[in-house]
View 1 (tube, one colour):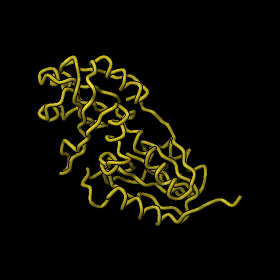
View 2 (cartoon, rainbow, N blue to C red):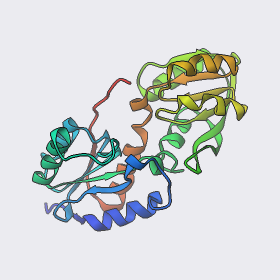
View 3 (cartoon, one colour):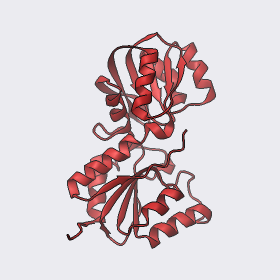
View 4 (cartoon, rainbow, N blue to C red):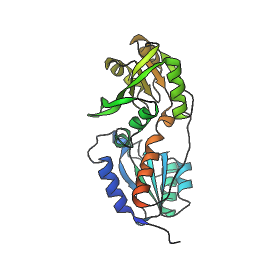
Length: 256
C-alpha cells in the first residue's frame, strides 16, 4: 500500500486558520505556529504536551513526522542554540521532523481546546467563555448537576487519569464551575469574582490554596500536564480525519 503524505505548508496553513493562530495574543515565549520545518512532506502526526528532548527524539525516529505540541521550544526567550536546545534542533533536522506549537490558541478553542474538552469530560453544560487572559477569554464557565465536592473531585480524577488536590473553600454542593487548564491557580481571586462554586485548573502557587479558602470557593488542582493532554490529542485527531494521515500520542507525563 502506498503511504499517504501531505505538504507541510498545507497543514500549517490549515492549522493557522483553524486555531486562529495569528489572531490570538499569547505570552512572548509561546511562539505559536510552525517552529521547525522539515523537508516539506508529512506522512504522520504525533501529539505531545511538551517539546522536550525525550519526546522529540522519539518522534524524530520516523522521517516526515509533524509533531503538535502545547508547549514549544522557546519559553525561555531568545537563547544560544547550545545544550538541550541544540540537541533538540539537531534531532529534529536530522530526523526530518516538523514542529508546530499552539498554546493559548489551543487552550481556548471551542472544539479542540483544553478547557472546553475538560469541561465536557466533567459533565459541564451551557459552556461560555470566561476569565480574560492576554485580552481574550481563556477559560470556560459551565453548569453541572448538583454534585458534592468529594464526588466532583473523583470525577475530575477520572477525567485526567490522576490525583486531584482540593482546596475546600466553597460550598459542599457544586453547581457552577470555571475551568482554566494549566498553571492558572494564581487567578483564584478573579475566578471567585465570577461567582462560581468551583475552579478547576492544573496547578497554582502556594498562596492560592488559602486564597481559595478566604474567597469561599472550591479550588481543584488536577495537574498542569494532565489537564493539557486533551487539546493536542483532539487536534491530532482533527488533522488526521482531514488528511488521512495516521496519528499517535507520545505521553511523557511530568506528574505536575
